Length: 231
Image 1 (cartoon, rainbow, N blue to C red):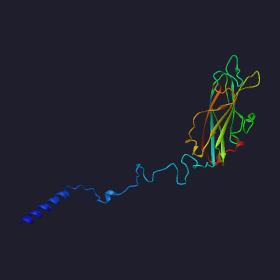
Image 2: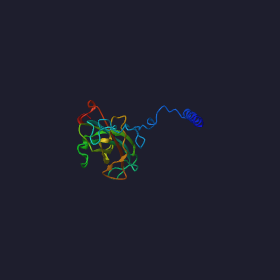
Image 3: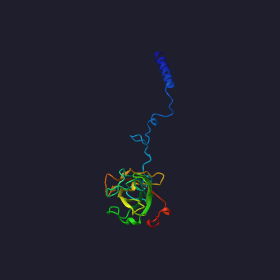
Image 4: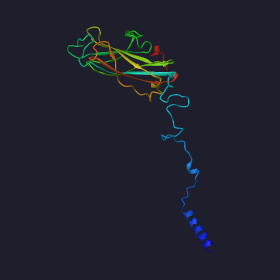
């Protein structure tokens, strides 16, 4: 009789405990399924900086330049507060300088001495100003690479003072040397970022006459790639 009563109490207690147990909708094994998350909390199929072809999402593949890309350099400003020429004399005794800027982006011989691969007389005039010693220039000089690579590029700049009474006098010759890596080539112009502003190397009056420039590069369609002769 006592044993039967004890068994009845035990079954009743088990039933109560079973009702209070939380219903998780899964058994003990299913509560310990390992997910695809690593110790850093990143999913195992997390996106990387490269797509399935190994191509860098910023542009060219690591170590390999894109087939067609554009190099854009910008001449930002000339800093000539004293208004002097390359020989140290004043541009004008009564006024400021009248700078005329010509430039060429040298890809063929970027490390060669001035003027590089093309004579300065053949460069294009890209900026002119009157009575300004230190103008903001903001002009771009571009070159397209239609196959090949360019680890160094040199923006060569000649600044003269226009004088209607005589021939132009030289304010300065500048070399703006930039290094370029395949990873610097963006996928398009919208995603291309400008590099830092760089002070160019002056042939004369260093520290007194200064020029600043920057560069960027981005992929272009093959149909938009222009050979140097068409620039």
